[in-house]
Image 1 (cartoon, rainbow, N blue to C red):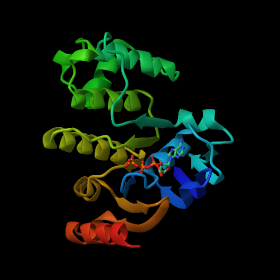
Image 2: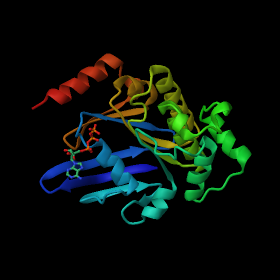
Image 3: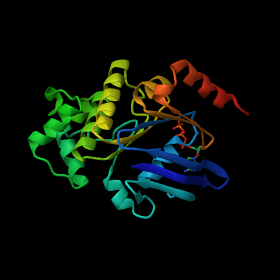
Image 4: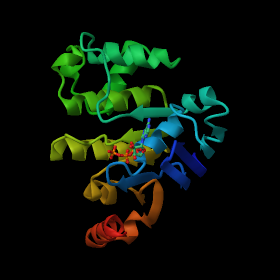
Length: 234
Ligand code: ATP
């Protein structure tokens, strides 16, 4: 569902991403770890078609992003660290607007159903977004992904700045979407969440995917040691 083959991106002499091979199947949650500047956001931006690869290809549901960005984007929902929404509009109005923007029209009951599935209390549905906490905004982001019936989900540090309970709730939502068949690729700095929520974990450094693990086959201590070892290598 989400696939990179020899995916590379350079900016002049800066190799932001080098020869990335990666695959996320439906039901999979692939967590990309790496220090600042490792190439995680570059990877997501290539899958979203925001930037063009220097070499290789990123595909979503078999559509090569730089060849057919419209077909690829139709299958994808993106949740950044801070979900950009309209502060003056309510949760349900934002959801209606962004779902329609991607060609999905739902009636009020369905929209409220998506918000509820995303864990947003009905008492908040009609409040302006500017009164929402960060966790609540992330839930609207999830509701938009649900309303679009996205088969692939790209997340860039979605739990950064959330309190542990909100972060846990968000991770459970993501896990639920994967159980329903979505393929999920998530950039994160949170080793704990990566191991708890992810099915697969990749560690990047300097634009290179240096190690990959099946989350259920590695304990937290070992993952932390592997991560630190890679970060300290010359
Ligand atoms: P962070 O954890 O800080 O978000 P990251 O792993 O997402 O980091 P990227 O943003 O993908 O890292 O950056 C990878 C490398 O590419 C960095 O060296 C960065 O400076 C470089 N880079 C990214 N975008 C550009 C650009 N537009 N022009 C030049 N260099 C860039």
